[in-house]
Length: 422
Image (tube, rainbow, N blue to C red; front, side, top):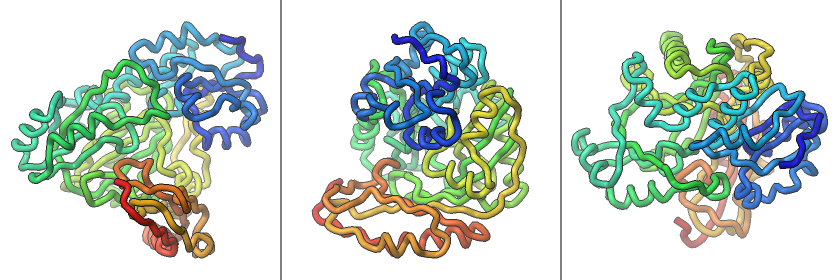
């Protein structure tokens, strides 16, 4: 391991080009050390990361996703003399980030809380008896377990990996769905460019299938106390793959329901012993009661950080660094406007043409438009967040206007495909 540059003040566990672009504007040159798995560095072609981002002093290959033995990174990476924060950047780096922060005497999630948040089964078990509503659930070891659970729950259930992200491998099953096929696809779901090939210790859960509006809660936590909290309304595909098709910030919920969500998050923090950082928890409002779907100990994805920044005139990344450097809590903020994102879902196949992007960018309220679909690329069926073909972000006076503007802008984009790429 090479020597750590003296200029390093922030250690990032995992690589995010979006986060680094923001830190280029917020931190001095050479102040960031990035730790990433060698396999991920190679797969993503980021060897020359310091040349791309002025804030980066160095990129160190390290076992940043070794959840079975996070002490390996503690023993491998020297503590930078001027380090002020360890930041969990990606889902698969949450445990190691917590271990490093703990070893170096810095604020963080706490090693045990991080371990629980990285395994949906451990989280379910930890919250049993806490007063937080959850669906009925069980660990599934083979397709027959799933079939038996489904039969005992009205012919409907949810099958999911316990330690993946972005809806990867999640299946909503009904009475007619092939459980053997679903099990095969769920257990094969992976992210080889994002996840290091450690010995597979994956677990799978089968859960009661709930119905109701879906939301997420983003909370900035300082020394176990919940400060700034946002509630995001979600739209989800109406098929067997519950991938999110849109978010709106802030969610237009009745005050009593918003209060119940905030109370549940505070109880979650207390139960798992989460110390400092950002929590991104997902909930289904079944029969008017928040039921926990899952919770991550990191910043949210899906453009939610952009929505929060625009809605509250804040910077959620700066808020995260505020608590991770021990500077103090981040209190409640008032939303100044509503902001929405809608994701482009295109017909699977080879893309022949994409039109309407300029018109969409000029539509009322549009602040950002990103398209991954382009002529010559292939669009696949959307079974996880990674297969979405683009997004548009809009502002509005309220949630209804922001959402309507996003849907209008999205309707102006026409992606023509041919063939089938499922």
